[in-house]
Amino acid sequence: MAKVKRLSPDEEALWRALMRIVLTLPRRLDSDLLRSTGLGASEYKVLMHLSEAQDRTLRMAVLADAAGLSPSRTTRVVDGLESRGFVTKRSSSEDRRSFLAKLTPKGLTKLKSAWPTHLASARSRLFDHIDGTAVPQIAQALRAVAARLDNQDPEVE
Image 1 (tube, rainbow, N blue to C red):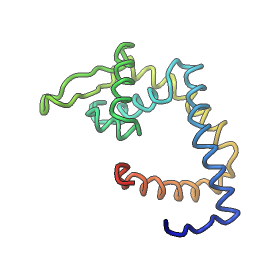
Image 2: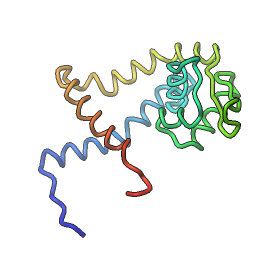
Image 3: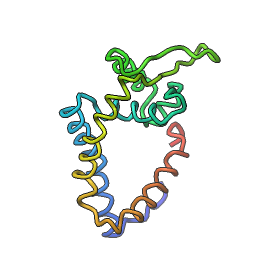
Image 4: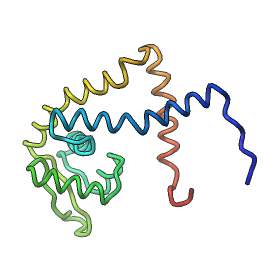
């Protein structure tokens, strides 16, 4: 095994804080949304990405990638949203093997009603604790890490 360069004290502190946030923040956001709106964070993300898509429709594989969910998890989330009337799912006319998810008017209404809770949760759980002048630098650094992660094949690593 190659020799690994140790983390500096600042890097170690950042790494530990980031790991805590990565593990804790999603649960807290999910809990806030679920308690107030009846939507989990994964459901919210799916509705949000559909609302931003052309014709409010996406192929399931594209939706999974955009929402950061596995294909099977996306199917379960979409099926649950479909049973509540928030989305519809149908096979693609261009490729019968793929399915399309479409946001319904009821789903858009639900998303709009959940948005203030999502925003308040993001603010109280994260942004209220960060100096506003640091946000652009933090965003730039995290976008670079996210882009790098997006370009890595998880099967290879």
